[in-house]
Amino acid sequence: MTFFKRSSILAVALATLSCTQVPPQSKAAKSEPLYAPNERSLAKHYEAPEWFRDAKLGIYFTWGPYTVAEKQNEWYPRWMHFRATESDWEGKKPGYHHDLHAWHEEKFGEGFAYHDMIDLFTAEHFDAEEWVDLFELAGARFAGPIAMHHDGYALWDSDVTPWNTSDTTPKVDVMGELYKELRKRGMKTVATFHHARHLQRYQGMSFQEATSRYGHLDSYHAFWNSHYPWDKDLATSSTDPKLRLLYGNLPEEQWLEEFWLGSLQEVIDNYQPDLIWFDTWLDLIPWEKRFEFAAYYLNAAHTWGKDVMITHKDTDMPETVSVEDFEQGRRNSLTVEPWLTDDTISLNSWSYVENLPVKTSSRVLHDFIDIVSKNGQLLLNLSPRYDGTIPDDQRKVLKDLGDWLRVNGEAIYETRPWLIYGEGPTRMKGDGHFAQATKYTEKDIRFTTRGDQVYAIALGTPKETLTIVALATNNSLQEEPITSVTSLNGDYVESWVQEHDGLKITLKKGAPTQLAYAFKIGQ
Image (cartoon, rainbow, N blue to C red; front, side):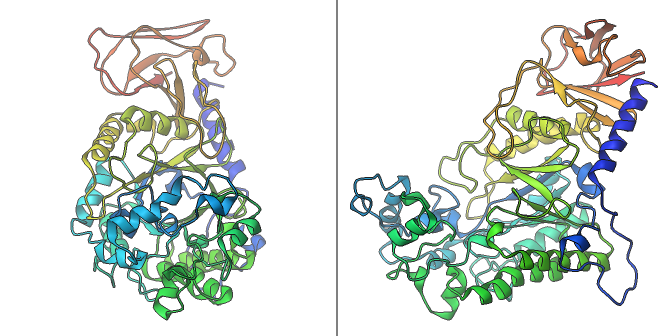
């Protein structure tokens, strides 16, 4: 068996093991829905369609009225309402966020509520065609908005809530215009939902009662399972019919059916997204509602004749139904099951704030390559300003990412994992969510395969002879000798030799510097 045939067999095995369910059936006329709202029925759906595994890179953006303040982060609508003092906590420090209420009143005026901020969310520079041009330039193959963050504000033309981009100041159907442009380019669409925290679950409770109920004696966790804190003197407790829809002040059963599920069904019916992504806190939604959503979505997709998918965090959905997502993290080893990382281009806030620091292009690219080598995909978050402009430093990272992919994309798109994900001196710390930043070197190698072809990617430009131990002549990972080594960016390999201690590659003098070097290994 050749080195390349064995790689191909592993790729097939990985795919087979990861899809114990039957792939989606083609569109057919049936009197009964294909999927019932239970795990046994929903498991007939293959959770990770091939388009997702081939696409590798998606882009979304954290954008809403909270960006008007350009302060702290996307949780501004929560922290702006906190007014706790040191005395509330018997000497315990209240927390970093409790100066925000005073800052907010100084900035916008006393009594200026979050719903008043929506009038300032102008988005006058939002241009769906220009944004999608940028996503395509970056090499993304699926994209879309944060459909609804914890604040309950919709970035689509909604009849479920009047608090949406079509009916308020922007007067634009963000989701509709983006999807139109994405589909023109053959790109897939994603809608992300974070609204499981939107419900007021602490109605009538004091600050201290809410914190005690959650089991934490610190101010950060007060009203933790709701985005807006209950405050009888602020709009968050309003019984005005319109304001209740923004602040989640509804009876739970009504909210679950009409708002949480209703928002999802509206987006499914009117926009037909290819991927629906959920933030954490989905465990706050009863299982029957989660399954009702999934059945509704998958049955709708069956009638469309589309392969769609759902993602979840932690154990919020069964893995037989949904792909697991890791926030600002990833796996530290090769997995059988495909997965997704959602990460942001910035170093702290997901939404735009003043002087927002942005990651280097090399860090974004190296993390992305590491993700792909371990059977993952990346959904990268952008942080536009309230007026619809995307800052130049973020654009530069996207351009650098796209420039690299246009030259080396053969080693990324439509690939599958090799026998091992990689080798090298650097090891990431942790596994799963919120992985510690890892600084890779040109001696760190990642592998991918496309059919029988194997690629080795150095996470930097080799300054001296590069030794790849996994491709040594006496290594059990391969049996046939290597007959060619080429760099995807051009004829820049000066020499190579396969020896007992590794495949050794030397670049030509003057070879161009790249953020990462992808080598095609021939037989």
